[in-house]
Amino acid sequence: MKITAFGVNKEEKYYFEKLAQTKNFELVQTPEWVTADNIELAAGSDAISTMQTGAYDEPLFKKMADLQIPLLALRNVGTDNIDFAAARKYNIQISNVPSYSPATIAEFVVMTMLRLLRKTKEMDRAIEAGQLVSAQKMTGRTLRDETVGVIGTGHIGFTTAELLHNMGAKIIAFDAFPKKDAPDWLQYVDSLEDLLKQVSLVTLHVPGLKENDHLLNADRLALLPQDAIVVNTGRGNLIDTDALIAELQTKHLAGAGIDTFEYEADIEREIQSGEQPQESHYLALQEMDNVIITPHIAYHSMKAVENMVGISVDNIFSYVEQGTTINPVK
Ligand code: NAD
Ligand code: COI
Image 1: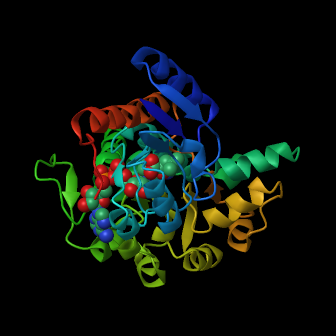
Image 2: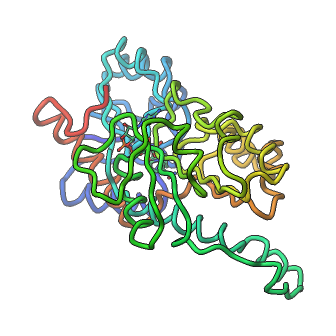
């Protein structure tokens, strides 16, 4: 069996090489994201394994069909960057890794919330500038006195809600398909609007599909109580960034934590061409003391990486040996 893995980082390389030895497959690896321009590298492969926020588009699927590569096995969860109509047209199968380590992302959310509640960015900046800020300027808020709105209670949203509940926060949740076996402490409301009116912190855990574009738009952000905080580790398109910036500038919102950014692709291009990010929304948010931006890194722990690589390879083996993947995505 031959597998070509694209977008491979240093940690993933270790697990891929270990698996290639124990499971005995031929492995080609590259740090480059896959596109129609470099897919030839995978000629003769049974499948490609990928992880990227860049697009999987029609030219790529067409070339995969020409090269007779039937399977694209994602190493990640999100499928918002896939042109499914094109994948179907060229009969390319897709699999993902639906649950590689929800706790990795959930813990990152809790960390970001605590950083925002205790104003650590403002504090770090002052200390780096050689000032000792007075405690009075840094009055914090305690998580156990907050009401957190969890939007999307799938793998990651539920694990996040559970951690926050265990730390004493009150949880209010909204999901298009509420959990049937929800514990007592997970209180669902019937609409997003209902949730937003009642919470002091909100965290997003729904997919970045087209229909969820600007789920938090200006009208909905305006429903949040004074001094609410927004955290987004879902996908950048879930928030109208212009509206978010306006709400932060008027000081209606007390802060934001952004791991997934609406203009991520632009920033990525700027960084890859060796520049400092110039994207205007990024610069506006980055300069605010009460906004923490992280580079789409909530997922990245050793446990997550091990599972992402391992389960992606399991999907490929299942397809080659049994004709179906374990985690097909339609
Ligand atoms: P999941 O499929 O287990 O859960 C998603 C939930 O969202 C489902 O329960 C679904 O019913 C609900 N939902 C979808 N659209 C909705 C809407 N408009 N209103 C209410 N509920 C809605 O997914 P998951 O594993 O929890 O992951 C969620 C998302 O997190 C992924 O799609 C991905 O975009 C993102 N993610 C980010 C990182 C990161 O590093 N920042 C890592 C992994 C996943
Ligand atoms: C996901 O698993 O969906 C993520 O957001 C991780 C990212 C590296 C693509």
